[in-house]
Length: 312
Ligand code: ASP
Image (cartoon, rainbow, N blue to C red; front, side, top):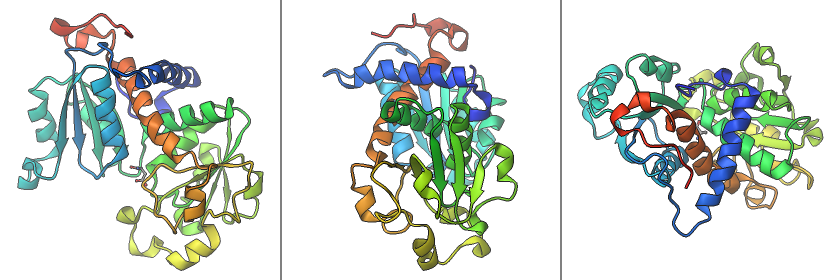
């Protein structure tokens, strides 16, 4: 694997390989000294053009636990504010010879584009409403740990499907793992033709009792145009996941950040059925596994500094 741009590029075996590697790295996170020398001498550049709490911090922690050097670049406060383009920024920062570039932008397709401009391994950490593959991988990891087996599970993804990169990556990943995926939400927030991805569509939550997993999404107001913005009161009344809609046998997931009181009620966020904190924890070990998959044992990316791949 040269880059991680989309879940479409991964088959089930590749997803399982990354998740199993993450399971091995989970042991490192429980140690007193949470570090292995696997990527010593390698450099990871985190290039973020959009806000991020979980993804950015967990990529940084993941790279540091693997002993890589990390450079964090946020577009605000940089020459991007003086008008420097994405291409010129990437070419400029490539002069520092990063081995991997972790990129988040509001533009669909940007990660694929920069993979053509530089020799670093590119990880898509969210490109507009297109994809967020590491979120899907950490969700597969979390569910495998919780359910044991994803194959055969019924997973409902609820909310703003249209503007969510998480929805797209997760529909693909969950289905590759053998789950049956249903997307549900108001018609204005479900793209026409989404069934082509293999999922079912529901415009009400009447049948949500049949789900094993309820995966709620944030309303992506930053990507909405006026006409797709539903009334929040109406949305809450029809689609909020609350104690009335979530049964004791179901588990609840959300990629964060949560808008408490909108897509989820406070009581379900704080209930033992919520796996939201486990998802954040999984972010570090899964991103370690992704960096390991891309960089360990690829001396051609940086021949003078190639370390022997090793776990401990
Ligand atoms: N954190 C996720 C993303 O960046 C989900 C969200 O922002 O709602 O796509």
